Picture 1 (cartoon, rainbow, N blue to C red):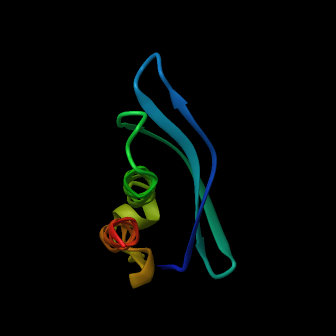
Picture 2: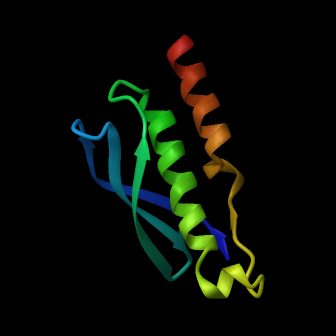
Length: 96
């Protein structure tokens, strides 16, 4: 399964517990899976880092699903969606 797009929605920061929360949609052709993700990060963390952490959490949840956990179906992101690349691109844009 090749993830070709990621959609973040319903983002909110929960100040009482110090976490970002969002729905993360992973899109692979006609298939779409939405995961409700929570990551412990400071409220002021850059958006690219926050989104990368949320994407990692969604991928972790996806890989725990039975069809992926058994290895019967492999999961990959198109290179442009790789969290490390997204963070690097955002940092370079801010530095320019």
